[in-house]
Length: 108
Image (cartoon, rainbow, N blue to C red):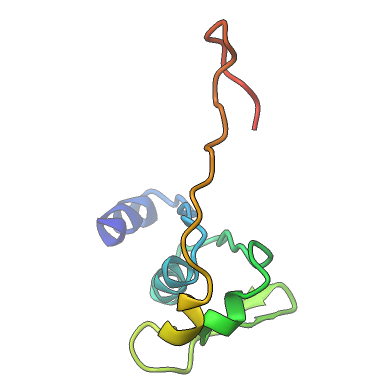
């Protein structure tokens, strides 16, 4: 779908800045998309969410001079260390409240 959207945007001279759900796998998928999309403008990247990110994920893209470098690994370029991941079990987080009690929209 993103390819179709990017092709339509390119037809009308519109640059692409797709949302990144901010995980390393989603980031790499978007990096691959960026590398094949002439009208790709910018990529969101989360680098400081958890201190153990690089322990669990190998192949996370390097940022140099404000640019994500192309992946060098196979597939999408990220590998998951299952043993390291098991040391960091899922912890439920209370979601951000998007609305005030009166129903008005809250700012992020």
